[in-house]
Length: 286
Image: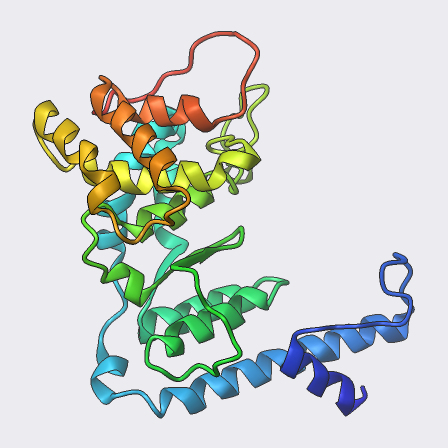
């Protein structure tokens, strides 16, 4: 394969074939794609190692955030939103598929993403990690606190360590997995009309994730009065949420805090409307 094509891809991320978009590819083009894939994976791993050498030794030695920590963060959300007979599988899968991007976590996350057919997320992980240490080129923008592209969820270290009392980006990114992953892929019985663990409206996916994130902090307060008081202060005290979304998110979180089952409030505000039928069974979490 021509070196110029590989170089262009590594610099710009653009992969251009003659006849691209036609749906018709020659054997030579398919072979080129295989070479592309191998070259970019090698380049990414090499760059990761080179940049790792520039990190402080203590940053490289910090262990990956443990599964028990992730499970504890997302447990209330899963139990509040997912059907009873799916909960244990959902909790297992979300826990295993969520990574916090310290050095060790990012290494594992890159390996996980490179096991799929898509490499764009692996590059985002690389720059999310090294950007937190000032090792990212200025022309590369990494403005997000996390990445969830379908199979895995990734939380930027700086977002994980935020002091915002309403923020839990582990919950936010794992919430996206709930509307990506399909129960039938894990051998679960799927009721007619439901495809994902939580079938969230496309236009409400960010509202869903932000509300889950903040409400997971609300339910840490034992008393209903303290939950409501904490939720009422969100609009003024939450500083890591997008300012153009804060009113909408805070209003939904407050409604959830006032309700007997707040997770149901979030679910009903964001899922795809369904034809009326037999009620589904959910845990009654606050």
